[in-house]
Amino acid sequence: MICLYHNDKPSRLTRRLFTAVSVCHMQAGHQMFEGIAIHRWLSWGALYLLAAGVTLTSETRQQCPQSCRCNTALLEVNCSDGQFAGVPNGLPQDTKLLNLTHNKIKTLVRQQFQTLTQLFDLDLSDNIMVIIEVEAFLGLQSLRTLRLARNRLKIIPVGAFAGLPKLQLLDISSNEILVFLDFTFRDLAALQFMKAAANDLVFISHQAFTGLASLQELHLDGCNLTAVPTEALTQLGELRSLHFHRLGLDTLPNYSFRHLEHLKELVISHCPMLETLSGNSLFGLNLTSLTVRHSKLSAVPYIPLHHLVYLVHLDLSFNPITYIHGNLLGDLLRLQELHLVGGSLLHIEIGAFRGLIHLRLLNVSRNLLSTLEVGAFHSVDTIKTLGLDDNPLACDCRLLWVVRRRQYLDFGGNSPTCTTSIQLQDWNFLDFTETEVPGLLTCRQPRILNRKLQEVRVDQGHTVVFYCNAEGDPPPSVTWLNPRLKPLSPTGRIRALSNGSLEVRYAQPQDSGTYLCVASNAAGNNSLPVSLHVRAFPPSSKTPFRLKGWFAFPSASPGVNGAQKVPFDIKTLLIAATIGFLSFFSSVSICFIFMFFWSKSKGQIKHTATIAYVPRSATSGSKGGAGNSTETSRFTMKLI
Image (cartoon, rainbow, N blue to C red):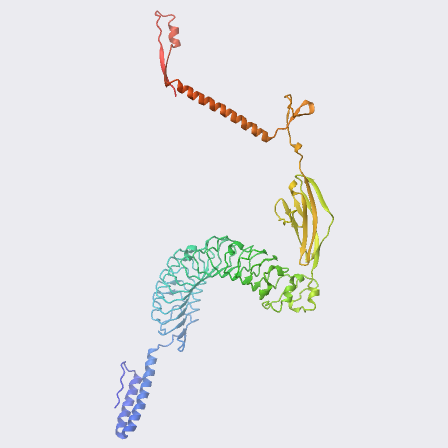
């Protein structure tokens, strides 16, 4: 007879099966031969074991909580939209994924999940959570992902994340968090990604990020921060990516991100007050990607960028930048992508991208550009993607290179169109054929309108203006060259005005010479010389001193009414005063030296003196008195 045992208490079904099998075994022993009995015993034994296993499995695995959906294959429990006011009871202990989103959970009490030791992912987003008690997640020793987004948290107490040694992702974005206290995240040594965007941060303590030794990516939202939390960020030595949103700063200070030596990506976005980046604001960084979007930068921050020689991606979109100047981005040797979408770009100068030998993507869509000349690039052969749509483009010879390379360029699904050209209004760049391109995209060389010779002679101190008007297609730019053929700037005493004129203020003799007006566009240039001669004041124009009634100098010429004109300027006055002062000082010095030695030759000098005198009252009284004696008074005087 075969005996089957089980260590656990048998259930009712198990006991019934055991009894049935036993009875069958007894009957089989009396009615059948031994081989058939053994065969049947083995069959019933297998049936018993199967029934016992099913019974034990149903007893071990708990039932799915009401209003939740359980997936036994994935070990997932989904309790979203279940109207739960707290974490439901009876959760299976072997659960790997737990979804509690879109409920009414307000508080997480201490050790709320202590039985779920195998939980891998916990999502508590979209609740009304206000309070997380200390050690609320204690016991979740296998947890990798924790999401608390879109709740009503205002502060996270120190110790709230205790017991999460393997947590790698924490999402606390879209809450109402005001402050990060010291050591808030000290228990998250394995954390690699933290999202804390869309909060109301006003202060981040210096030790708030202590313990985050493995953090790779951080998203912060500090619309009420008045300073970059530089000291707190120094705790994140392994940080690779930093995203800042809604900073309340108008200037990014110097050394804002010092000690972040491993940082590769920096994103600053939606900062409506940010106007400038200080010269050393990015000092110490070796970035490969920099984004400053949706801010108020009015110019490309050339100085803060110049040391970022490893920069590959640069995004300055949605800033009121009007110009990209020439020859100022050449230090970005490895730059491959430049985005400046939705700005106020009016002009990209010739040589703007000179030195950028790896530039393959340029996106300047949604700006105010009328053209983009081939001379702006180091080489157009490297450009693979070009965003030029939503610009008021004038289709002429300056854009001929774009049309000819259109089969090699990716326009991102938005091909450029002609806007300001009358005959090509709304023409798409992809609509041109090779035969009509040379006749449609043309330019006309500039011509200076008034070529009358301008030769001006003026006295010293006068102001002179030269005029130079030119026409062409596209409209030419006018520059002025000085007599040494160097360009004149719009500032200074001699300056080129915005209307094409040249102004020489307070003309001096050294300003004399031939100036050159040069009108140029993509089709060529035209020039016009002008001449300026400035007469200096004559030497006799200096105002002389007139000496009347004095003796005449031999070299002086007679003047009106017998007065003698004596040239006498400030230099002569200074020399005469100096000579007189030296003579006087020498004489006084000699006198003092003589008196000093003379006093020494007289021997020791007495420093006190006694003087006798007769008072007037005593003298007058003696006239009518009996005696002849007089009283003499004395006083002693000390010499100082």
